[in-house]
Image 1 (cartoon, rainbow, N blue to C red):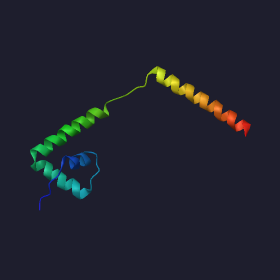
Image 2: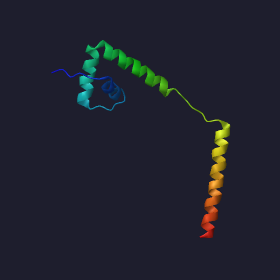
Image 3: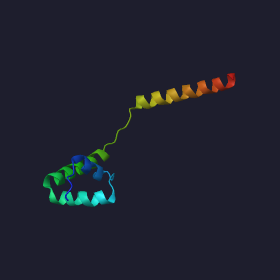
Image 4: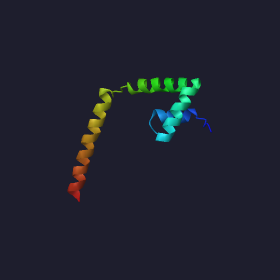
Length: 83
């Protein structure tokens, strides 16, 4: 009996969220189904591109976080002293 795999199954396979038995079956399905294989290859490329994305916060955001952290620390110290 041949199992039909969906694009969701291929995504799970791509992110190693499948069992060993599923891996073997999906790999076989990829070899036999051009559309599924093309989807897998496109998804793999997108995953690799997304892994290259680097987000860096602005200096203003960093300063706001530092300021909040310092204020929070001061408030915690004041609350501890008043108890």
